[in-house]
Image (cartoon, rainbow, N blue to C red; front, top):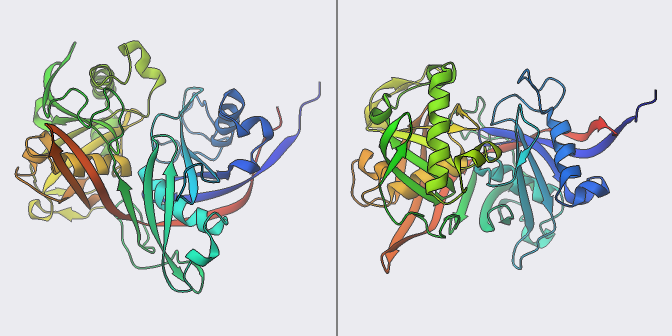
Length: 392
């Protein structure tokens, strides 16, 4: 019996923020994978090493966490006044599917650098020294994101002294601006139920106060003490508890229905990437996963978020947008946990440390809208060349 030999596909392995993934140019993919569908999904699954019943992704490029099971496809812009189209695929670790329902905010910082290195940005818009502004069309959620990438001697500056909790080594700072970050899913509003706080009935759990928001990424916010937590938990406190993970997935499924993202809870397993579930608490002292002491006075609010069924080691970039936007709206659970009132930025504590994010929100005709959210990340190329997969 003969087997098809491996093929090689041009690819770049990059870190962006607290995530990393395999980046492709659309035109470099095999012809069958240049359009959405089974061939593309199968290729990306094999690249990452999924589905893997061992949940290790040993036979692929994935790192067996939601933060490292990611793929990006970049293409020529389909929208005017943009430099590049950015399509994000969250690859399931143990199931045979790729979730295209949302964005990865962390990897957006790497998209800017890749777009410059890959020739998507016109040379006359790249300074010899300074900041290059990359206008990104996020194709999953159809939103504009602006990445401001430092340039030295005409090339992307990757090294630097900017420190990001959740990333071991310092690097150059990349500012990312999410324009009009409300996703427009569900009923099309930033708060799809029309309420800043809802009563979310979850069978087997109870009725929970919840803020459900479409900004950055659809997110369900809960009060930590309503579900038996303090808001200072680290990964092992939750990820080693199957009952806790089942509870969060139950909450996520019922919240997704209430947000209008799915029609029934039975659809939730096929939409793992969105919505996210997060819980908030008032500031308190804790020790981060790196051993760094975080004081109650260092943050405005504590937030813990789950991604792909597990507590995230830091914070997803898109969830950080949701946190900042919700914090900017008086009366949400995030805003109340942060002390209430009007604010245009929030510093929150996560398992790896702290993060400050700015957001602007306003109310018109009874509806809240978000105009912008801003955060700083960093990015760098880890490896470039070709990724190989079996030809079948």
